[in-house]
Image (tube, rainbow, N blue to C red; front, side, top):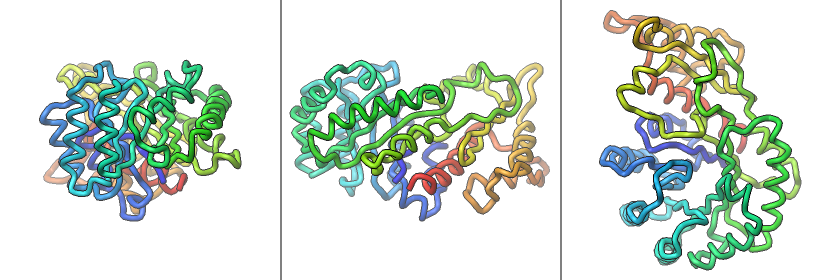
Length: 346
């Protein structure tokens, strides 16, 4: 089992749709909504049509600056009520939810016999002196038995190699204590190896070690925690949502990411538009560099690899060279990453 954390956006939902059937059977995505507009609701409806398996649902991720409100709870309740197969949705909840919210959502989940997911934030894991008591209170407020609770340890931020041992020890300490509350349905370890953004990286190629994967391997090396499930944010940055304003678009660079077995290769390009910009043609150079590298998995590996190979071939379509755009490259990189990672960790 593999739990990629995705935003409810068009390119990310399409990356899920691109997965082959064998990979889909290994993936249980965690879908985050970063807004409650009609656009975001539309993306969610599209996701529902294309995804038939189980998924975790978070209407308001903890890292956003938006406060959790009753409106988010209404969205959660509506989503649970709108599903034809309600057992497919696993609501994501937090320790700092209001007692009323926990009781309301917990009662609905109990009436439908749904599982829930408790997302322990990096702040919880770093500061809670008595995490066991806080989690015990959560169970009491929701009324959901521990056997139907999925426990998500979210170390989300950019994890550095030097921190791996410390975070492994943190996980082992907390999990050893929380196991005393009962047998959890699933225990998930989430982290990100990606930087906050590319602002400090100059144009060129960079290999980013997959420290998040190393962290999971470090935990699983213990005989006690071999069943811990791996989770990451694929090739996306840990601090999002991304600003999709016109100004942000003008500042976008033609940068792509390609995942290998132990690293994420970042091909950092220049700005796409404006003075001294490199244009969309930079993507063709990136594609050629990827397929020329011995780490390329081949066009038949995933839909993303097929797109990269097509762009590298530089065959004109309707008189124009195909380059792809920012969203298409994000979709391709995520499709490749999820296909590879699902096989690695399952």
